[in-house]
Image (cartoon, rainbow, N blue to C red; front, side, top):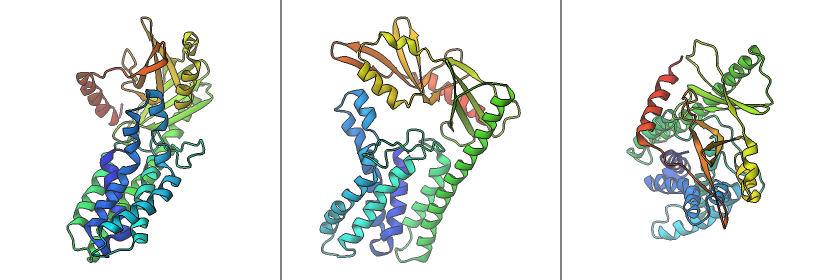
Length: 334
């Protein structure tokens, strides 16, 4: 999830664990704990693009990392507040453990997922919430701010903070139910249109849980579709050629294999002039009804003497305004 959401979650967890003893300091350090796992993005600045993608949401998003870092951070903070002795290092460690581990637990609900069980090569991705979802974050944020303004021993403070945790968790459950409903809608439409397919992958569209997208593997091509819970017309499917054969000319097969693994096999190749683009379909296209499909994660493949490198095409701000406008209109049905 986005940084603000992880800060809010970390603050609420910190309050639940230690707020009554140390007050707003629990929220502060909980918020900090909630941001620590995403520091792996800083390491990515010193690595090649493929490796940077591979390590994101890796070790720092694992249970093992949370178990290992929590006692160290707890000990350091206990030394910082050694004069007040409001909490023991074990209590601070417990706060940091929950602040660290709830971060990847939430990330597991997004499309990218997380390697919660690192070093095992298993990425959990339930794909039931977009990485930025105001309906998850804003009510949660309001509850945290209200709780922050109340005395630490106040029962109302505890109730308000608990309400935020309940609302956010309930919303996740609702999105899981919506995922099930929309999955049924997509598969029913495929059956009604006598479309043969081998795999289907569904996820919410950006910034909401009302509009859902689907990728369908149909042999030598993919089908893309979307469905809003307000739709009144039948689901239509957009054909996207896989064109995997275009990658035969790429010499750096090892780097290419790593990129394919990252995409979990959901990729299509496009060509503009002589330039090849690797499109990771898991994150969808900006507008599947546009004349030219532009994918959210589209990598320009550049072969150099040092091997294959990838570059992300520059996004046009004016085009993004149009995309967001189309998305807003599509949410409310066809």
